Image (tube, rainbow, N blue to C red; front, top):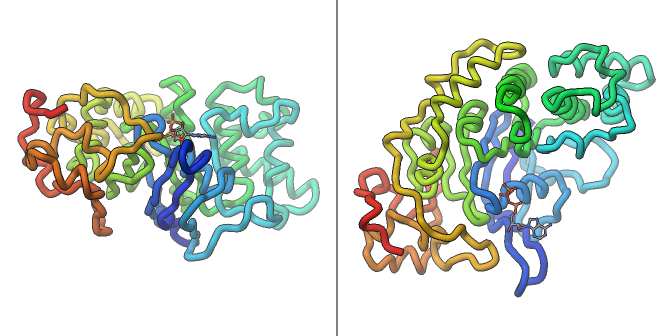
Length: 352
Ligand SMILES: Nc1ncnc2c1ncn2[C@@H]1O[C@H](COP(=O)(O)OP(=O)(O)OP(=O)(O)O)[C@@H](O)[C@H]1O
Protein backbone atom coordinates (compact mmCIF):
# COMPACT_ATOMS: atom_id res chain seq x y z
CA UNK A 1 0.00 0.00 0.00
CA UNK A 2 1.40 3.40 -0.95
CA UNK A 3 0.63 7.06 -1.44
CA UNK A 4 -1.47 8.16 -4.40
CA UNK A 5 0.36 11.06 -6.02
CA UNK A 6 -0.62 13.42 -8.76
CA UNK A 7 2.52 14.89 -10.31
CA UNK A 8 1.82 18.00 -12.37
CA UNK A 9 -1.33 16.42 -13.78
CA UNK A 10 -3.06 18.34 -16.55
CA UNK A 11 -6.35 17.41 -18.21
CA UNK A 12 -7.52 19.36 -21.19
CA UNK A 13 -10.82 19.02 -23.02
CA UNK A 14 -11.11 20.10 -26.66
CA UNK A 15 -8.56 21.92 -28.78
CA UNK A 16 -5.69 24.07 -27.54
CA UNK A 17 -7.35 27.28 -28.73
CA UNK A 18 -10.99 26.63 -27.93
CA UNK A 19 -10.84 23.98 -25.26
CA UNK A 20 -10.63 24.16 -21.51
CA UNK A 21 -7.84 23.09 -19.18
CA UNK A 22 -9.98 21.60 -16.43
CA UNK A 23 -7.02 20.39 -14.36
CA UNK A 24 -3.81 22.36 -14.59
CA UNK A 25 -0.48 20.96 -13.33
CA UNK A 26 -2.01 19.58 -10.14
CA UNK A 27 0.33 18.30 -7.46
CA UNK A 28 -1.51 16.38 -4.81
CA UNK A 29 -0.80 13.50 -2.46
CA UNK A 30 -3.27 11.14 -0.86
CA UNK A 31 -1.10 9.50 1.79
CA UNK A 32 -1.62 5.77 2.33
CA UNK A 33 -4.49 5.24 4.75
CA UNK A 34 -5.57 8.91 4.77
CA UNK A 35 -8.75 10.59 3.60
CA UNK A 36 -8.14 13.72 1.54
CA UNK A 37 -11.18 15.95 1.11
CA UNK A 38 -11.22 17.85 -2.18
CA UNK A 39 -13.33 21.00 -2.15
CA UNK A 40 -13.94 23.80 -4.61
CA UNK A 41 -16.76 25.47 -6.46
CA UNK A 42 -18.54 23.96 -9.43
CA UNK A 43 -16.30 23.78 -12.50
CA UNK A 44 -13.03 23.91 -10.54
CA UNK A 45 -12.01 20.51 -11.94
CA UNK A 46 -12.68 18.15 -9.01
CA UNK A 47 -14.57 15.50 -10.98
CA UNK A 48 -12.12 15.70 -13.85
CA UNK A 49 -9.24 14.98 -11.48
CA UNK A 50 -11.18 12.06 -10.00
CA UNK A 51 -12.02 10.63 -13.40
CA UNK A 52 -8.42 10.98 -14.51
CA UNK A 53 -7.29 9.01 -11.45
CA UNK A 54 -9.44 6.01 -12.37
CA UNK A 55 -8.65 6.26 -16.06
CA UNK A 56 -12.10 7.43 -17.20
CA UNK A 57 -10.63 10.67 -18.59
CA UNK A 58 -7.24 10.73 -20.30
CA UNK A 59 -4.46 12.77 -18.73
CA UNK A 60 -2.92 15.37 -21.06
CA UNK A 61 0.22 15.90 -18.98
CA UNK A 62 1.92 14.73 -15.80
CA UNK A 63 1.69 11.39 -14.01
CA UNK A 64 -0.50 9.64 -11.47
CA UNK A 65 1.36 7.15 -9.30
CA UNK A 66 0.36 4.70 -6.60
CA UNK A 67 3.18 3.73 -4.28
CA UNK A 68 5.57 5.32 -6.77
CA UNK A 69 4.34 3.17 -9.67
CA UNK A 70 2.16 4.13 -12.64
CA UNK A 71 -1.42 2.91 -12.41
CA UNK A 72 -2.51 0.00 -14.60
CA UNK A 73 -3.84 1.12 -17.97
CA UNK A 74 -7.64 1.34 -18.15
CA UNK A 75 -9.17 -1.75 -19.74
CA UNK A 76 -6.22 -3.98 -18.80
CA UNK A 77 -7.18 -7.19 -17.04
CA UNK A 78 -6.16 -7.59 -13.40
CA UNK A 79 -6.80 -5.86 -10.08
CA UNK A 80 -7.87 -2.24 -10.09
CA UNK A 81 -6.27 -0.52 -7.10
CA UNK A 82 -8.48 2.57 -7.46
CA UNK A 83 -12.26 2.39 -7.44
CA UNK A 84 -14.68 5.26 -7.89
CA UNK A 85 -18.07 5.83 -6.27
CA UNK A 86 -20.32 8.40 -7.92
CA UNK A 87 -22.96 10.83 -6.75
CA UNK A 88 -25.68 8.80 -8.43
CA UNK A 89 -25.43 5.10 -7.55
CA UNK A 90 -27.66 4.28 -10.52
CA UNK A 91 -24.69 5.06 -12.76
CA UNK A 92 -22.74 2.13 -11.32
CA UNK A 93 -25.60 -0.31 -10.66
CA UNK A 94 -27.31 -2.16 -13.48
CA UNK A 95 -31.07 -1.86 -12.79
CA UNK A 96 -31.62 -5.33 -14.31
CA UNK A 97 -29.23 -7.06 -11.93
CA UNK A 98 -29.97 -7.89 -8.32
CA UNK A 99 -27.78 -6.28 -5.70
CA UNK A 100 -26.04 -9.62 -5.12
CA UNK A 101 -25.34 -10.11 -8.84
CA UNK A 102 -23.94 -6.59 -9.13
CA UNK A 103 -21.58 -7.05 -6.23
CA UNK A 104 -20.60 -10.59 -7.29
CA UNK A 105 -19.68 -9.30 -10.73
CA UNK A 106 -17.19 -6.91 -9.14
CA UNK A 107 -15.59 -9.40 -6.76
CA UNK A 108 -11.93 -9.80 -7.70
CA UNK A 109 -11.19 -13.21 -9.21
CA UNK A 110 -8.31 -13.89 -6.89
CA UNK A 111 -10.53 -13.13 -3.86
CA UNK A 112 -13.23 -15.69 -4.52
CA UNK A 113 -13.31 -18.42 -7.16
CA UNK A 114 -16.51 -20.37 -7.71
CA UNK A 115 -20.14 -19.63 -6.92
CA UNK A 116 -20.05 -20.55 -3.22
CA UNK A 117 -17.01 -18.45 -2.43
CA UNK A 118 -18.48 -15.53 -4.34
CA UNK A 119 -21.76 -15.82 -2.51
CA UNK A 120 -19.89 -15.75 0.84
CA UNK A 121 -17.92 -12.71 -0.29
CA UNK A 122 -21.14 -10.89 -1.29
CA UNK A 123 -22.56 -11.61 2.17
CA UNK A 124 -19.38 -10.30 3.80
CA UNK A 125 -19.44 -7.11 1.71
CA UNK A 126 -23.13 -6.48 2.42
CA UNK A 127 -22.45 -6.82 6.14
CA UNK A 128 -19.47 -4.52 5.83
CA UNK A 129 -21.65 -1.73 4.44
CA UNK A 130 -24.39 -2.32 7.01
CA UNK A 131 -26.90 -4.17 4.82
CA UNK A 132 -28.42 -7.51 5.70
CA UNK A 133 -27.84 -10.45 3.38
CA UNK A 134 -31.48 -10.59 2.27
CA UNK A 135 -30.92 -7.38 0.31
CA UNK A 136 -28.85 -9.44 -2.14
CA UNK A 137 -32.05 -10.57 -3.85
CA UNK A 138 -33.39 -7.05 -4.31
CA UNK A 139 -33.09 -4.82 -7.38
CA UNK A 140 -31.67 -1.27 -7.09
CA UNK A 141 -35.12 0.27 -7.63
CA UNK A 142 -36.39 -1.50 -4.49
CA UNK A 143 -33.82 0.20 -2.26
CA UNK A 144 -33.66 3.69 -0.78
CA UNK A 145 -31.05 6.19 -2.02
CA UNK A 146 -28.86 5.60 1.03
CA UNK A 147 -29.06 1.82 0.63
CA UNK A 148 -28.16 2.10 -3.05
CA UNK A 149 -25.12 4.16 -2.14
CA UNK A 150 -24.11 1.46 0.37
CA UNK A 151 -24.38 -1.11 -2.42
CA UNK A 152 -22.25 1.10 -4.66
CA UNK A 153 -19.64 1.21 -1.88
CA UNK A 154 -19.79 -2.57 -1.47
CA UNK A 155 -19.30 -2.95 -5.20
CA UNK A 156 -16.29 -0.63 -5.12
CA UNK A 157 -14.83 -2.57 -2.17
CA UNK A 158 -15.38 -5.90 -3.95
CA UNK A 159 -12.25 -5.35 -6.02
CA UNK A 160 -10.19 -4.91 -2.80
CA UNK A 161 -8.95 -1.47 -3.86
CA UNK A 162 -6.23 0.51 -2.09
CA UNK A 163 -7.93 3.82 -2.82
CA UNK A 164 -11.57 4.85 -3.13
CA UNK A 165 -12.38 7.95 -5.11
CA UNK A 166 -15.71 9.24 -3.78
CA UNK A 167 -17.27 11.96 -5.93
CA UNK A 168 -20.08 13.79 -4.10
CA UNK A 169 -21.41 10.49 -2.78
CA UNK A 170 -23.80 12.07 -0.29
CA UNK A 171 -24.96 15.16 -2.14
CA UNK A 172 -27.96 13.47 -3.77
CA UNK A 173 -29.15 12.02 -0.44
CA UNK A 174 -31.55 13.48 2.10
CA UNK A 175 -29.74 15.26 4.90
CA UNK A 176 -31.04 12.66 7.37
CA UNK A 177 -29.41 9.86 5.34
CA UNK A 178 -26.16 11.69 4.64
CA UNK A 179 -24.94 11.24 8.20
CA UNK A 180 -25.35 7.47 8.12
CA UNK A 181 -23.44 7.15 4.85
CA UNK A 182 -20.68 9.43 6.18
CA UNK A 183 -20.41 7.37 9.33
CA UNK A 184 -20.14 4.28 7.15
CA UNK A 185 -17.27 5.92 5.25
CA UNK A 186 -15.47 6.65 8.52
CA UNK A 187 -16.13 3.16 9.78
CA UNK A 188 -14.87 1.46 6.60
CA UNK A 189 -11.82 3.60 6.49
CA UNK A 190 -10.94 2.70 10.08
CA UNK A 191 -11.55 -1.01 9.64
CA UNK A 192 -9.92 -1.46 6.25
CA UNK A 193 -7.13 1.14 6.24
CA UNK A 194 -8.39 2.54 2.97
CA UNK A 195 -7.08 5.70 1.39
CA UNK A 196 -9.70 7.98 -0.02
CA UNK A 197 -10.03 11.05 -2.20
CA UNK A 198 -13.33 12.43 -0.99
CA UNK A 199 -14.88 15.12 -3.18
CA UNK A 200 -17.59 17.35 -1.81
CA UNK A 201 -18.71 20.93 -2.09
CA UNK A 202 -19.91 20.72 1.53
CA UNK A 203 -17.19 21.82 3.95
CA UNK A 204 -18.93 20.33 6.98
CA UNK A 205 -19.01 16.95 5.26
CA UNK A 206 -15.35 17.23 4.30
CA UNK A 207 -14.48 18.27 7.84
CA UNK A 208 -16.27 15.24 9.19
CA UNK A 209 -14.55 12.54 7.13
CA UNK A 210 -11.16 13.96 6.10
CA UNK A 211 -7.67 14.06 7.61
CA UNK A 212 -6.38 16.44 4.96
CA UNK A 213 -8.13 19.06 2.83
CA UNK A 214 -7.18 20.16 -0.67
CA UNK A 215 -8.89 23.27 -2.02
CA UNK A 216 -9.23 23.54 -5.79
CA UNK A 217 -9.79 26.70 -7.78
CA UNK A 218 -9.86 26.92 -11.58
CA UNK A 219 -7.97 23.67 -12.11
CA UNK A 220 -5.28 24.33 -9.47
CA UNK A 221 -4.84 23.22 -5.85
CA UNK A 222 -4.65 26.51 -3.94
CA UNK A 223 -4.45 25.19 -0.39
CA UNK A 224 -3.55 21.83 1.12
CA UNK A 225 -3.00 20.70 4.67
CA UNK A 226 -4.38 18.97 7.76
CA UNK A 227 -8.12 19.53 7.98
CA UNK A 228 -8.05 21.39 11.31
CA UNK A 229 -5.38 23.76 10.09
CA UNK A 230 -6.91 24.51 6.70
CA UNK A 231 -10.45 25.02 7.98
CA UNK A 232 -9.46 26.48 11.35
CA UNK A 233 -6.68 28.74 10.09
CA UNK A 234 -7.11 29.16 6.31
CA UNK A 235 -4.16 30.74 4.51
CA UNK A 236 -5.64 31.27 1.04
CA UNK A 237 -8.23 34.00 0.50
CA UNK A 238 -10.31 31.59 -1.60
CA UNK A 239 -10.52 29.12 1.28
CA UNK A 240 -11.63 31.97 3.51
CA UNK A 241 -14.29 32.84 0.93
CA UNK A 242 -15.53 29.25 0.87
CA UNK A 243 -15.71 29.17 4.65
CA UNK A 244 -17.55 32.44 4.80
CA UNK A 245 -20.09 31.11 2.28
CA UNK A 246 -20.51 27.78 4.08
CA UNK A 247 -23.75 27.07 5.87
CA UNK A 248 -23.55 26.99 9.63
CA UNK A 249 -20.96 24.26 10.10
CA UNK A 250 -21.89 23.78 13.72
CA UNK A 251 -25.49 23.00 12.82
CA UNK A 252 -24.56 20.52 10.12
CA UNK A 253 -22.18 18.85 12.55
CA UNK A 254 -24.82 18.31 15.18
CA UNK A 255 -27.13 16.88 12.53
CA UNK A 256 -24.49 14.32 11.66
CA UNK A 257 -23.94 13.39 15.27
CA UNK A 258 -27.65 13.02 15.76
CA UNK A 259 -28.48 10.80 12.80
CA UNK A 260 -25.31 8.81 12.56
CA UNK A 261 -26.09 6.12 15.06
CA UNK A 262 -26.87 3.13 12.86
CA UNK A 263 -23.32 2.34 11.80
CA UNK A 264 -21.44 5.12 13.51
CA UNK A 265 -18.86 4.97 16.21
CA UNK A 266 -20.71 7.32 18.50
CA UNK A 267 -18.09 10.04 18.30
CA UNK A 268 -19.71 13.39 19.04
CA UNK A 269 -19.17 15.57 16.02
CA UNK A 270 -20.78 18.90 16.72
CA UNK A 271 -17.77 20.46 18.39
CA UNK A 272 -15.33 18.83 15.98
CA UNK A 273 -16.99 20.57 13.08
CA UNK A 274 -16.85 23.99 14.65
CA UNK A 275 -14.00 25.51 12.69
CA UNK A 276 -13.94 29.09 13.81
CA UNK A 277 -16.07 30.29 10.95
CA UNK A 278 -16.62 33.60 12.72
CA UNK A 279 -12.95 34.36 12.48
CA UNK A 280 -12.92 33.89 8.74
CA UNK A 281 -16.04 35.74 7.82
CA UNK A 282 -15.19 38.04 4.96
CA UNK A 283 -17.48 39.65 2.48
CA UNK A 284 -18.17 37.41 -0.46
CA UNK A 285 -16.77 38.51 -3.76
CA UNK A 286 -19.47 40.28 -5.70
CA UNK A 287 -18.06 39.21 -9.03
CA UNK A 288 -18.80 36.77 -11.83
CA UNK A 289 -17.75 33.18 -11.19
CA UNK A 290 -14.39 32.28 -12.70
CA UNK A 291 -14.40 31.22 -16.36
CA UNK A 292 -12.17 28.16 -16.87
CA UNK A 293 -11.99 28.95 -20.61
CA UNK A 294 -10.14 32.20 -19.85
CA UNK A 295 -8.14 31.78 -16.63
CA UNK A 296 -6.56 35.04 -15.43
CA UNK A 297 -2.82 35.57 -15.66
CA UNK A 298 -0.55 35.22 -12.62
CA UNK A 299 -2.53 34.11 -9.60
CA UNK A 300 -5.82 33.04 -11.13
CA UNK A 301 -7.73 34.17 -8.06
CA UNK A 302 -6.45 37.75 -8.30
CA UNK A 303 -9.48 39.42 -10.00
CA UNK A 304 -11.62 38.19 -7.14
CA UNK A 305 -9.17 38.50 -4.29
CA UNK A 306 -9.78 40.78 -1.33
CA UNK A 307 -6.30 40.24 0.13
CA UNK A 308 -3.81 41.13 -2.62
CA UNK A 309 -5.10 44.68 -3.17
CA UNK A 310 -4.90 45.41 0.54
CA UNK A 311 -1.31 44.37 0.86
CA UNK A 312 -0.10 45.35 -2.56
CA UNK A 313 -2.25 48.09 -4.08
CA UNK A 314 -1.23 47.65 -7.72
CA UNK A 315 -1.36 43.86 -7.42
CA UNK A 316 1.58 43.59 -9.79
CA UNK A 317 2.89 40.34 -8.37
CA UNK A 318 -0.59 38.79 -8.23
CA UNK A 319 -1.32 39.74 -11.85
CA UNK A 320 2.00 38.59 -13.24
CA UNK A 321 3.33 35.70 -11.18
CA UNK A 322 1.65 32.46 -10.35
CA UNK A 323 2.31 31.56 -6.70
CA UNK A 324 4.11 28.27 -6.34
CA UNK A 325 4.15 27.29 -2.68
CA UNK A 326 6.85 25.16 -1.18
CA UNK A 327 5.54 21.72 -0.24
CA UNK A 328 4.87 22.39 3.44
CA UNK A 329 2.53 20.39 5.60
CA UNK A 330 0.02 23.25 5.28
CA UNK A 331 0.56 25.29 2.14
CA UNK A 332 -1.34 27.93 0.22
CA UNK A 333 -0.73 29.21 -3.31
CA UNK A 334 -0.93 32.88 -2.37
CA UNK A 335 1.84 35.48 -2.48
CA UNK A 336 0.48 36.86 0.77
CA UNK A 337 -0.37 33.61 2.53
CA UNK A 338 1.73 34.62 5.53
CA UNK A 339 -0.23 37.84 5.94
CA UNK A 340 -3.70 36.58 5.06
CA UNK A 341 -4.79 36.22 8.65
CA UNK A 342 -3.64 39.66 9.70
CA UNK A 343 -4.76 41.52 6.57
CA UNK A 344 -7.59 43.89 7.53
CA UNK A 345 -10.17 42.75 5.01
CA UNK A 346 -13.22 44.92 4.63
CA UNK A 347 -15.61 45.01 1.68
CA UNK A 348 -15.30 48.79 1.38
CA UNK A 349 -11.65 48.62 0.45
CA UNK A 350 -11.98 45.81 -2.04
CA UNK A 351 -10.94 46.62 -5.59
CA UNK A 352 -13.01 45.36 -8.48
N1 LIG B 1 -16.45 16.05 -21.00
C1 LIG B 1 -16.15 17.37 -20.98
N2 LIG B 1 -15.93 18.05 -22.12
C2 LIG B 1 -15.61 19.36 -22.12
N3 LIG B 1 -15.49 20.10 -21.00
C3 LIG B 1 -15.70 19.47 -19.82
C4 LIG B 1 -16.05 18.08 -19.74
N4 LIG B 1 -16.21 17.74 -18.44
C5 LIG B 1 -15.96 18.86 -17.72
N5 LIG B 1 -15.67 19.89 -18.54
C6 LIG B 1 -15.32 21.24 -18.13
O1 LIG B 1 -14.17 21.15 -17.30
C7 LIG B 1 -14.24 22.09 -16.22
C8 LIG B 1 -14.16 21.35 -14.89
O2 LIG B 1 -15.33 20.52 -14.75
P1 LIG B 1 -15.48 19.46 -13.55
O3 LIG B 1 -16.79 18.76 -13.77
O4 LIG B 1 -14.27 18.64 -13.48
O5 LIG B 1 -15.56 20.42 -12.30
P2 LIG B 1 -16.15 20.13 -10.86
O6 LIG B 1 -15.32 20.93 -9.92
O7 LIG B 1 -16.22 18.67 -10.63
O8 LIG B 1 -17.60 20.74 -10.94
P3 LIG B 1 -18.97 20.14 -10.33
O9 LIG B 1 -18.85 20.28 -8.84
O10 LIG B 1 -20.03 21.03 -10.93
O11 LIG B 1 -19.06 18.71 -10.80
C9 LIG B 1 -15.57 22.84 -16.41
O12 LIG B 1 -15.30 24.04 -17.11
C10 LIG B 1 -16.38 21.89 -17.28
O13 LIG B 1 -17.29 22.63 -18.08
